[in-house]
Image 1 (tube, rainbow, N blue to C red):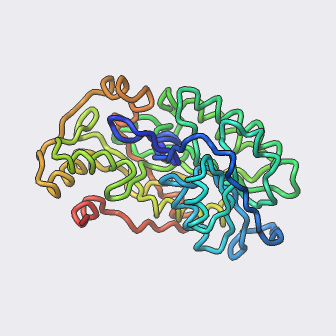
Image 2 (image 1 turned 90 degrees about the vertical axis):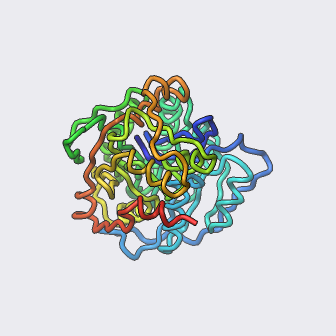
Length: 347
């Protein structure tokens, strides 16, 4: 479902996807010798209107994941200053190399780092502790972080990452932000959390629902690339006609930057550059590139849930989602609209 969004867990199926469908990078337990480096300049002035051209201090969770790392890179390129939560020495090193300031912490233990947050103007939450208790883990984080942000002067922007799997199977209907949630049960906990963010009068709450996040050989396509590299038939869930809404991670990062700059409080946006692409087409594009088996192997939703967990039933959802609101209201212009051509162009 999500997208979206920070932590990668190695399995036989290669990766797990957090934020209800988005790949996120998972790290080992934090080490004690990591140092928090906070050398930020004075806080920029707050404006009642848009944040355009204002350099902000932004706190990012999940900043080394597929979504979060692209967001960090894009925001730094726009001149923002990034403080990012780091769960390990390795994560801190990667963040520092990208120009961010690492801060020791884990979303499962917010009491250890919330009080030490520096002056910030915004929070972008892309991380998720991808375990069976991921809902309670995030709830603890929100219970600690949101009151701390509310106690600060002004209304801090808070961008929460939802996900496409919250909308359930849409089949031939193209879902928009007005559609009722019909979440995959494994991610049902996310709905009250995002509603809490949007309803708060003490923060400037925004929600982004990423589609299935990809790179030509990464993100939701990573397993396909690995299977073709190994000369195996690609496994797809439920059938080749199942449609996945898609977004390249760089286009998604651009949407986060626009939302940070322009989105009004209480707004939600679906980050879908491609409304729905049959997954069989993606599988066959990889097969053509590798010369491997041309037809994918179909496995059931029950089989993938047994292998990876109940969350993986999202791969079987036939979905079409619209990114029209983000285009119209924020001026979002995705550049990656032909994943099959991008797969064909891989070296």
